[in-house]
Length: 90
Image (cartoon, rainbow, N blue to C red):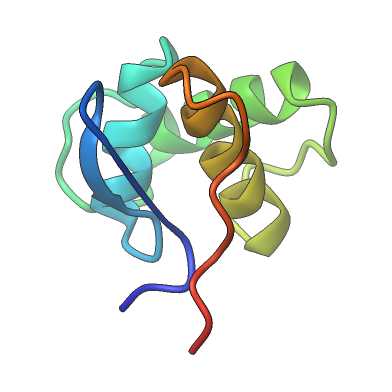
């Protein structure tokens, strides 16, 4: 079980521990990471920076724990759950 994941009827299951899952999440939230290929390339980093600015967190283009948590929170909010899903306990 991933520490950072999202599962909803609207977006399906997303494992945000994997770059491919991060790319899918960014795309579903309107931040274009380019091709969903599991690679942390320049388009993905540009989308990450745009999402970080939107989420008002540190803008560095790196998908660390702060960015993953912000993605989980944003997905939960946009999925209409009304509350953020808690990261799974490992």
